[in-house]
Amino acid sequence: MKLFGIKSHGPSSQYLISLVLIVLTAVTCYFLVGYIGYKVVALVLLLVVSVLAMLYDILPVLIAAVFSALTWNFFFIPPTFNFTIGSTEDALMFLMYFVVALINAVLTFKIRDFEKKARDKEEREKSIRLYNTLLSSLSHELRTPIATIIGSIDTIRENGSRISESSRHELYGEVAKASLRLNRQVDNLLNMSRLEAGFLSPKLDWCDLNELIHTVILHNQEVETGHAILFEANENLPLVRIDRGLMEQVLHNLVHNAVEHTPVHSTIRIEVEVADGMCRLRVSDNGPGFPEHEIPSVFNKFYRLPQSAAGGTGLGLSIARGFTEAHKGRIVLENLPAGGAKFTVEIPCEHSTLNPEK
Image 1: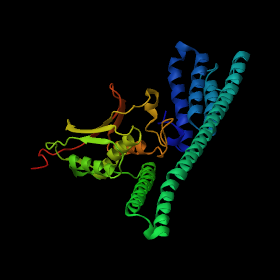
Image 2: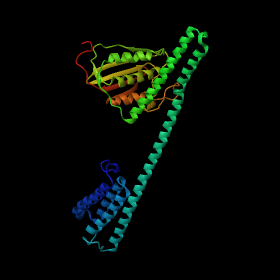
Image 3: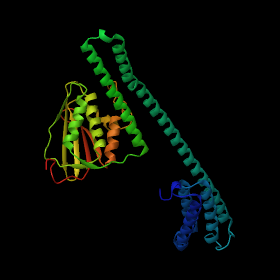
Image 4: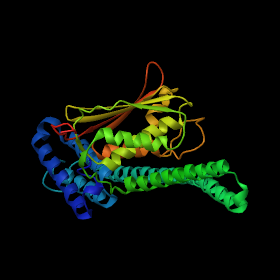
């Protein structure tokens, strides 16, 4: 259908294709008219006009309808090879065919136009909902860390030497946490804009996965969360050709998601393997897991689980999927039988035959 659709051809091509299809149908029916009869030919031509009405603009379809009626009259209605109609019954049939073909073309076009307007309206409403969701998220997610930073700085500046050293360090820690949170939200918005614009192209280079994972763990441990992040380095892992920046963001978002949505003192485990031309990263936890009916939606933009803790714009997992798919890979979420959730990232990649030490 896409091959013959409106977007595939301009107006002149639509006229040409419509007439050519009517001619080809008429030629085929001409050799079969002895078996099917000229009345069945009218139904076949009417079917072609109906199909064209589903694909093309109204004017090419109307011209095809008129042309098909005249073709049926000239080549099939006795006496053939002229526009004379021999019987009142055939004249009535011709008139009915002509009217039905035109009505069918017009109604089909109007139905298609109505469906298009309904889709456009639905897309506009969806855009408005996304805009409101984003605005609501930003009003909280950006304002909260900014307010924390401003409040802490004002407290330090106004009280000066009256603040104890421990209180001063605590305020500095709050500023650091708020700054990291603010930076993370801005990064997520910028990354999502890159994905939406379609400008994302991985820059592949050799990467040590052990080092990448340790970097992500270090960044997540800079903010005290009370979670244990476990990873057992494999010194025999080969180097792989990936976009380190994108994959580091993928892993960071998965680990941060586990930190944000599992109870304090939960365990987060990271595993990695390279085999069969695939790099596989797994991030699992022993938290409550995900409701099964929510799993298909967790990678959608701005999606947050019902009754989830405050914080976050619902972009982290969507960005993780986008960056993974930019590597022509996939990301899968599943609940573990013993409790908790596991994200598996699989991307095709080249890998070295030497281990990192060599």
